[in-house]
Every structure is written in structure tokens, then in C-alpha cells.
Image 1 (cartoon, chains in turn purple, yellow):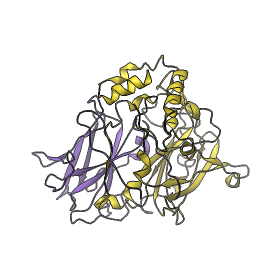
Image 2 (cartoon, rainbow over the protein chains, first blue to last red; image 1 turned 30 degrees about the vertical axis):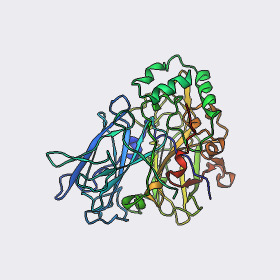
Image 3 (cartoon, each protein chain N blue to C red; image 1 turned 120 degrees about the horizontal axis):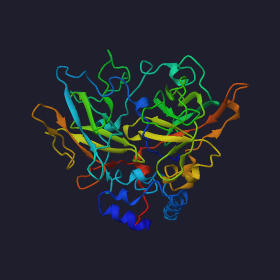
Image 4 (cartoon, rainbow over the protein chains, first blue to last red; image 1 turned 60 degrees about the horizontal axis):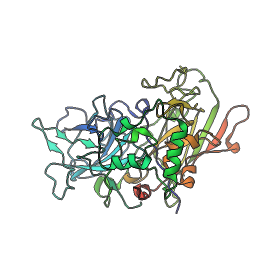
Length: 164
Length: 267
């Protein structure tokens, strides 16, 4: 067994490298059948985290997890089931996507001051067997809302997985 | 002193960062904090709760990570292809029409999984400061020169044997505001995907012989020296090119999050 390469923080200077046009639009914003998944990232003092990055991985509407390229140049490509969003100055992230046919979005969190990435899930509001605290709220305009708290009384449940 | 402050954090007291003054905290004090933490059981992954890196104070989870079996979308990493990445993106010295200033280098290596199998045709993204230690990022206010011929951003896909290769300029060290006279060792940020979603990794590659590594709270957050050394590239003369560039070799092993959270018990 080979030893793992350790992680390190994404630092403060990742935007020009990791953000790209259309990164958070798994489907075009406003497209028929699309949904917005959004929220804020907060630190342990309840302040927004303006230098975080969220990635999601998900199934398509029929429950199939796509294994196709095209996430970096989305125009004309099939649904890839993966997206990335850097938080803005208010700590806000958003994705334009479809509601997955499986009960949750798989989520990875990176930030300056966070020495290794964190994993969590965002479950759909009607999911059965959801992990407590990881269910998105359906807003009146149809958007899905989920805030991520790195620390504090509302700290998000983060995961570790068995070795792969 | 240190243990008291860490305890306070675990108890969830807000604005614990106010306990530190970055202007007056010396490197000696930071190094002393690091040494005390290193005296505990070594960990092969960075400690998320690592006060010598001040920005961690309010950004590390305090609750234990929940062990779950991956399912659904967690079983499969995203896929990238040649439509996503142009070959020229792997050469950071030709992106702006003129030669960037600095020491030309090639960094290459293999991306492997925990069983030593190559991670094939997968995306590798890098970003770095220029030779003067300045990022082409609006947030970087270090008064060192920008290089109009250098963005410091690259991408490539691994080949069928897991190999990646970038041509670049050796990044310079740069100051940051963690404490007084704090300097980051020269490094290249790497973003990596495995075959499983759970193998996602962002890390930093360092250069051999850098005297700043021992002083750096980010590198030293990995308390096991053997694990820390896995972030240091080796000089590879076989890949240096006559009258052109210097070669470095750095291999990456993606095992997923399992190895990440065998944290020592503290406080």
C-alpha cells in the first residue's frame, strides 16, 4: 500500500486558477427544468467566508451519475454532474443544476484557513433517510438553500470515508 | 498558554483569534507552538485544528467527522477529457506571448491511487506565484513585481500511465500576515481528482532544501515528518534540459479521506 499525499489549504489566491466561465452552471441558469442550489459559508463566529470554494457531484434527473467530460467547457456538452463555485464577498455560493434522481448532492468544501478539504452532503427536501442537519430548504421561489457552517453551534456534519 | 487557547476553541468561544496579534507574534513563538503540537502523536494528514496557522481558528470543525460509506455520486469522480484541456495549458511559460522572468523548470510525476495504480486521463490543475513571489491575483498586495508574461496557472490531463508534466518558472517565497516576518516557502498549488469522488485532493508541492519549510505553519500542520516529506519534490537531473531548464519529480498518491483524520487526541 502506498502512503497518501497529505492535503494543504487551498490558500487565498485560487480564484484565477480554479474559477472558470460556467463553472457553477451544470445546466444554464434559467433553463427549463433547472433548479438553483445556493447558500452561504460561515466561520465559527458566524461571519461569511469569502474565500471558500464549493464543489458538487451529483446524478442526473434520472438517477444516473454521468461519467462524461466537458465540465470545463460546457457549451454543447452533455450534463456532467460536476460543478464548482467560489464564494463571493458575502460568502455566497450558487449552482444552476437539476434535482438529482438520487437523494443528495455530494459536496466538497475548500477554504483559506481550512488545512484540508471537507466532505458533506446536501439532501433534497423530500429525501428519506437523510443525515440529520444535511437537508436543503425549499424556498418559496423554488430555489434550494443550504448553508455551510465550518464551526460553531450550527456546525455542518462533515464526513470521512473508508479508505478507497 | 497554547493548550489553554486550544481548549477555549473547543469550548466554542467566539473571536478566539483576537487572542493573537500577528504584528507582535514572533517566528520564535510560532515555532515554539509548532514544536509543542509536534510533541504529540504525529499525524500523516494536516491537523485541521492547528493554531500556529491563525486562519484555522474559526474555520476548523470541532465535531468529529462522521464515518459514512460512499454511495451514489460519491462513488465516481468527475471525468475530464481533451475537450476540457488544451495541451498548451501545461506550459506556463508560453501563455502571454513573451518569456516570463525566472528560473525555468519542469515539474513532472505520476498520480497514483493507494494501491499504486495510475490515475489515468484525469485533471491536474496548478497555480503559483511568479519568480518574485507575487500571484497574478487581485488579492495579492505583496509589493513585488507582477510579470506580464506569467499568470501562474496551468492544467493538464494525466496520460495512460498517470504521468503529468508542467513547464513553468520556479515560484518565489513570499511574506504573509500570519505573524511578524512570516514567509511562505516556495510552493506550487496542486488540485487533483482520483477515480473516486472521495479521493479529491488539493495540496501544495514544495522544493527540496527550502529553509523556510521548517518555519511554515501550513507545511508543519502535517505533524508526521515522513508524511510532510511527501510534499517535497526531488530534483531530477534526468529531466533537466541542456541550456534550458531544471527538472523536478513529484509523485502524488490519492487514497481518499481515510488517511486524513487519524488525529491524535489533544487537550
